[in-house]
Image 1 (cartoon, helix red, strand yellow):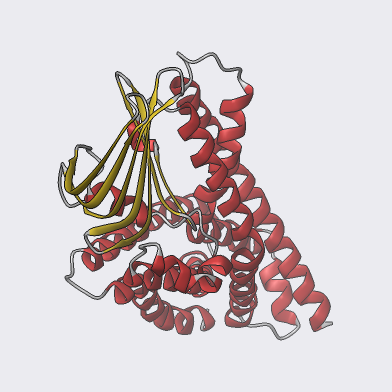
Image 2: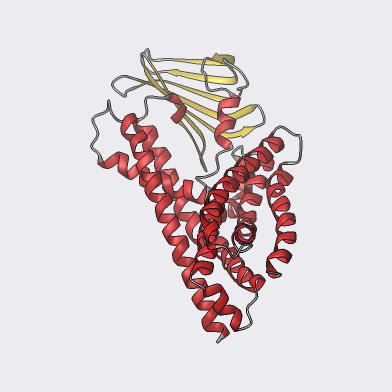
Amino acid sequence: MNKIINQYLIINFLKVIINTVLIFFSLGIILNLLEEIEFFINLDQSFTLPLILSLSLVPTLITDLLPFVIFLSSMFYFLSLKSNKDLLSVKIFGYSNAKVVLIMAFFAFIFGFFVLFAVNPITSTLIKYYEVEKSRHSLDVDHLISINKNGVWIKENDNSGYKIINGKTLDNQILKEISIYFFDTNHNVVKRIESESAIITKNPWIMKNVFIYDIKNNKNYNLNSYNFYTDKVLDKINSLYKNLNTISFLNLVKNYDQLKKIGYSKTILNEQIHKFISLPFFLFLMVVLASIFSIGSKDNKQNYYYILLSILVSVVIFYFKDLSIALGETGKIGLILSVWMPIIVIGLFCLIGVIQINEK
């Protein structure tokens, strides 16, 4: 009998989660589609491309918001258990409030690992496609930086054409093994620069051991030092290194050493790994937190109050999470601690709350 009850509780909880995800997905598609249409409004593109790009981006956004999706799903589910007397019915079979909550929480915990190992590889592939496709049509140079296993790739547009810059590795302030290709407006290569390294902290880059192939004028130059003017300095490139959404959890762990070689900071990589690992624990606690706010009262008339409260709590947790990360990035606390700080605080609150709801 217990197995049947557990299955009933979990299946219905999963249905609520799926419905909530679909609501978030639909809202995300509508809002992002408007932004993509505005982006492509002056380009000769059909409605299909903005739609595909929205479908590629929104799953990653939902994954980032998953703790709040689970929290809202849990709130609605527990309120529904109360209103249709299912919570009272399972108590006849010896289920306490705490037992029901823990069943849902452990399911959310397992669901978190499912997202890491099954969903995250898909969303990372989609967001990578989004970045590549957006950069192909972008008139904004901020979209024209890419980082992959072959190093750093930069595209710059100017009046005479464009430049493609590739650096194999980024070591602190130094970009190594650099190749720069200059193209005219007809996409013909007119010049190539090869350099052993460059200090890229400011504009211009200070390049060392430079060889210049002037294809247009059929001349070659060998220089010990060369100033290369570009607005793509270290701060702009590092800002992209912080965005690891294009790398799945499995690839991050598997290619950890390779990512460090091409320039990713060990600290940032470790922070991202901890963000991934903390997800199941975050989902677990969000279910417990939702139960504290929803199971506490037996008055069904207060359901609207609890719904509004759940939205407010989601906003507070969202900003507290961002504040914690900001404190970590500014060195006020450790980066790893900044990832786990919201979970520790919510965990302490839930520890007290679970004891109270079990008494009701």
